[in-house]
Image (cartoon, rainbow, N blue to C red; front, top):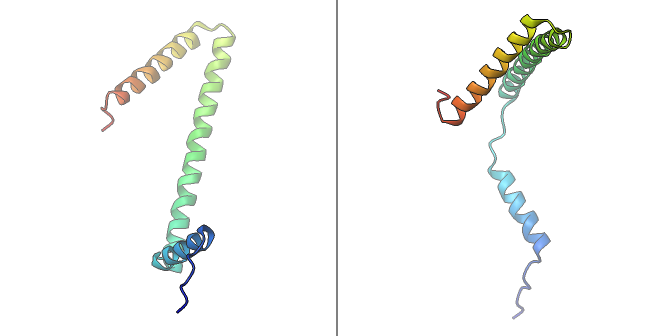
Length: 95
């Protein structure tokens, strides 16, 4: 009677990986397109949002650099609001 020799680590890894892949619920084509559309919409909206923020902060920084007192005050207010929001969130009040 011959004993089976134990699998090495690489063989165990691939067997475990194959067993895990068989248990995966693969999305249908309809589900895939639905999720893809969601990702694209969120990506475009975030690009627009970040573009607006970039424009606003660039405009504000240009005013601060030029020495315009209104922009300096606006900059201080915005930085204070951001710091206050960060503190508020850090205290667990995000919702």
